[in-house]
Image (tube, rainbow, N blue to C red):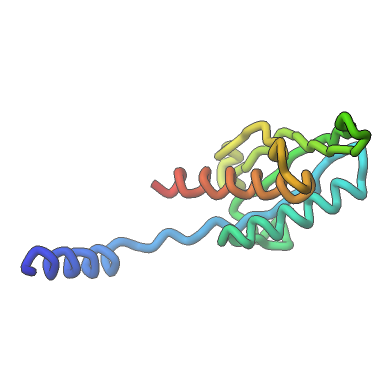
Amino acid sequence: MVKAILAILLGLVSASVLPAQQPKRIFVMPMESTSQPLADMVTAKLISHLVKHGLTVVDVEEKADVVLTGAGIMETRQDQYGHPHFHIHGGWRLVSKKDDGIIWADDVSSSRFAQSASTSFPDNVAKSVEEALLKERK
């Protein structure tokens, strides 16, 4: 019981003494692609997925702490029954506006067996960005 009370008190003291780190504000550059309608849709879905993952997205680059930018391509393949399957992959990076340092960069693809490549791809980017920002906070 005493240990539990001490743990709670230590938590309260450290929370009041240590400044809470503000979440990074992200500006998403429009995705570069050979298909502008696809790029616009994926960019819009990416913003939605970032917000769903609890990240802060801003509409004006000047208000951002970091900028997410990338380019991608969509491939279409047919299965043995002639049904089209789409796959999106691209290179992405998260850049700090403070020092132009690259916080995270990676190749990202839509999930292989996803129903929708245009949904799976932005979700995979959002998950990777979220992990990178959590790692940076530590």
